[in-house]
Amino acid sequence: MNVMRVLIQGLGEVPIPVLLSIRKLKPDVAYIVCSEYQLNYVHPSFEKKNRDLIVEEARKTRTRVIFKQCDVFNPKSIRDCLLELLKAVDIFEHEVIFNYTSGSAPVRLFLGVLGVQFSRYSDRCRVMYSIKYPRQKLEIMRNHGEALCEFLPSDIDLLLDVGLRKLKKRQR
Image (cartoon, rainbow, N blue to C red; front, side):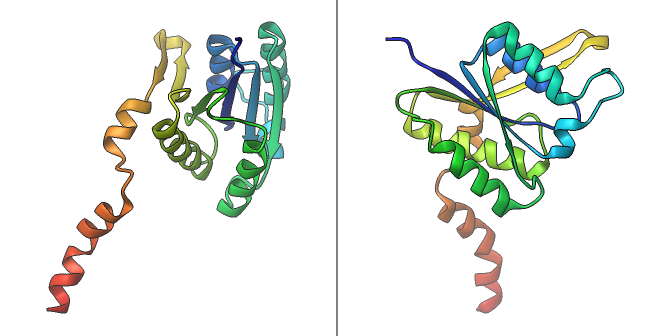
């Protein structure tokens, strides 16, 4: 049985993390959460719009790219966008890769937390970090899922308990 590989990633002004993820991971489908500005932006290191660079890279790996546009600074808009795209994804049947490297800070936060939480339920989910600095000859493509699960407790009550201890002491 051939498992479909799905990439879910944000896009910032620099397209490198998306291009690297598509090139290295070769997903069947890549959902890119972004704004119209980010899609049409031309980074000084490139001569083309981010959209064009991503589509060209996707052609090389035969990846179907779906740009999911939203207000990347509005958490409700990001949530609604992710809800819509997750309807087409099955975390138990598909290999789902959440790349939290690029995009606005709220998009990266959502993707990282979502990836960590889903990886707790399905071993087919991963949380990736990918970056490339050509001048320094540095390329990172790492699965951060295990490390993030270790450092991001799933039990929010634990965090609240630690954070609210001072409040409890003040009330005494």
